[in-house]
Structure formats: structure tokens, C-alpha cells
Image (cartoon, rainbow, N blue to C red; front, side):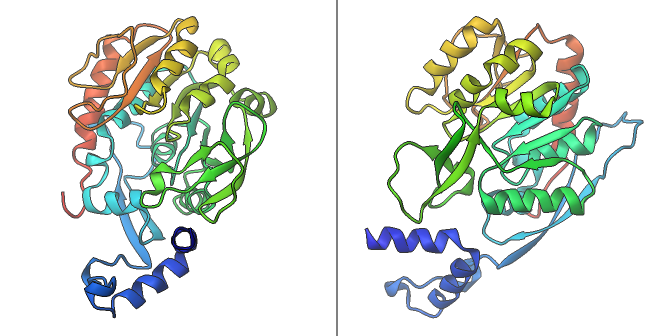
Length: 321
């Protein structure tokens, strides 16, 4: 118990985490010592190349942004090594193609993390973009990126769920991409209280017209959908959802989405993707678990755009290619 609490303390505060690792580099390996060459820096300077279509005549948005981030955050570390070419490229291509082929309207990125999808939406479209992230350090970083890169997307410090009030956010011990809401009230340094609301309540207050929606909340996706059914019925946004095979997520999503009369496409293989009648959270050969939900049959132009964006993303490599 004490060991878990100490580990949670180290994970929660970056300065404590950095200091702890510096101490461990001076210890023998048999006492938990670390190889100094494998310890991440306190801060990381990251140059991120953004995709652009070859026939893009608008010229809007930057081709590259510079980020200064905490050294051990998961997504920036992967982006530094491999770039956007290896960061959910099929899902990103689906998302970018949806921006090109849906009516004007807002983009909602639920569970945004540092805001990769929000960055691309703001850089490659004139749409209003909202990034929802309840983890304080990730939301702060996303806000800093939006401001420093002059992208102008809005960061919302809320957890979207199926109720209004508060909930416990559990920090994943080794991967900040997997922080998630949990039931129960047991306190602990690895859990923190965050504000929650439903997508329907938030949208009613803000008065947006969402046409592209992306959800990745580490297993809480059905709760987000349940709290946003009115938005899906009224505005019919194209929706990307990461589906994990965990605790009946697939079954709950099917029960919620079936009455809405969307088409369900696994983001898997070469487009055009084939619509399915069952949702499965197993990984695709590319390692992704994303599903695309559309209110109508995607046009041939959409699939061509998806292929073009995938090719553009393949050029956005990191230090290790």
C-alpha cells in the first residue's frame, strides 16, 4: 500500500519524478539503479512536422510546430522518435479526410491528451476546435501548444461522461494515454477528483454545431456516447471512437449506436472500408482499434482523400524514422 502511494506521488509531480530518477542513476542496478542514458530529460524540445496534401492551394496553417514538453510524457516521446507517420496514421487520415468532406461545423476531440488531433484540425481547417482533457498537466500542455503555435483551439478542462458533477480520474502508472475515470471513492495519490459533464449539457451551454467528433477515453467511450446521444441525433457528426476490448465496451457501444442508424467502419486495411454490423475491439494489423461512424455512406471522394492524407502522414517522420 505504502509502495503504491509513493509510486503514485512520483508519477503525479514531474519535478519529483525527475529528481527521483536522477537519484536512481547513482545507485547500483541491484538496488534499483537506472542507466543514465535511458533516463528521459526533464524537458523535451520537439519539432513536429505536420502533413499537407500535395494539391493544397489554401496554404493555411503551419507545416511544422515547435513544442517544449515534459520529458517523460508518452505521446511527445513517441512523436519525437517516430513522428506522426507512426502515431495512429490510419485514424489521423480518417479524421483529416472527415474535415474535408463534412459540412462546416465544430470539431470536438474528447480525451485529447496533449491535443494531436486538435492540432491537426486547427492547422488544416478553419473550424472551431475544442479539446477535452481532464488531466491537469496534459490540458495545460495542450493549451500551451494552442497558444504558442497560434493554432487557436480551445482546451476544456472537463471529463465528458454520462453524468454531471465529479468523478475520480485514475492516472495510469506507466502511460499517460491511459488515464481514465473509475468508479468508487477510495482516495489515493494515483486518483484525483475532476469535474464531469455530459456532451449534451456542454453543447447546449456552448451552442456549437459539431460535425466531427473523436472520442478516446481509455474505456469510458460508451459513457461519453450515452451523455451525448442528443448531440448525435440532432447534429449527426462523423465520429471516430477508439474501441478497447474491455469490460463490455463493444456491447455497450453497439446498444447505444444501433438506434442512431449510423454506418460502422473498422479503421483497418486499405480503403474503402467495409461497413460492419458488429463492433469488435481487437487490434487491426496496424495496431489501431479505431472505428469510424458515419451518418451516411462516405463518398468516393472521401476515400480518395483518406488515401492522400495517409500518404502525407507517411512523410511526417521523427528522429528514428
